[in-house]
Length: 344
Ligand SMILES: Cc1cc2nc3c(=O)[nH]c(=O)nc-3n(C[C@H](O)[C@H](O)[C@H](O)COP(=O)(O)O)c2cc1C
Image (cartoon, rainbow, N blue to C red; front, top):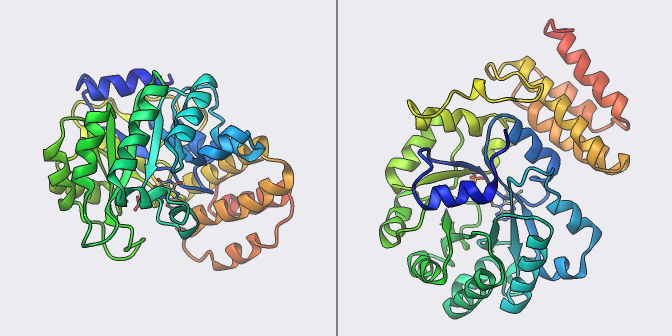
């Protein structure tokens, strides 16, 4: 059964949720509704939308509406990005009127197009503006508001701890920290230990993010950061079950086994080749339900590629993928692969 995002959030904040949450990270161009559906089906309770520009929410651009679509389960947090407190607050109120039950504020995006508008990680350079945005958004809505940030702008300006304290004072319910600076972009290794200092400075939940891809990295990140939960982005590409696998592993013996969670047609057994291909098929189906066919084909080629890259001797199929032009052709390729490994 779907867990309401608002109730879950309150439980995490009040320490009544006995498990450490494992959360799907917001990823622009990736965590669309089909992707979130697949991740949710494996038993993950908290998933984030792609970032949505606050200005665009107000202009109600069609694409933006799609990004926020929630599949009626109230389990998606919508992430807003922007630099103007009033616009961010107005956009937050608008998405809450659409039924969204958790707002996340983006203070982490390193992309030049975003930071050039003083938004995303650029806000970390201006703590007063950060405070104004958080206060305005918290005041504008009556659902939990969380923040996602980096360690700081660069090595000389690692001010995540200061912003975390401001966030707590502004009524922010949870903080996620990607253990890199903006200057690092995605280079180097996420510094989980640096998050421990932030965790020690506030009493609201702190979530560790960056380079967590399996149970081992999840356990190490939790030990080094002392965080209350984990957020996973790239590790879920082509492996959407990884969140619930980690969720089970880090929460044992308390966490109910993921295999008892209803997976709506996807069998959670192990990460076998069969499961990868079957999940790729389901994911592609969701894409054709959600997007118009041209867009669905375009995105499916990339998404199916993520699943196939883990399989042995698959280079030829991956090359074929790029030339496929219809849903039938995509299904045919995946069925051929299933037949090759002995599943009809
Ligand atoms: C393709 C892509 C798109 C991303 N888009 C967003 C975004 O919209 N909002 C955001 O806060 N972070 C975004 N991120 C950053 C991720 O949420 C996450 O912080 C980062 O990838 C580190 O976590 P990971 O190592 O688990 O991937 C994006 C990352 C990737 C790879």
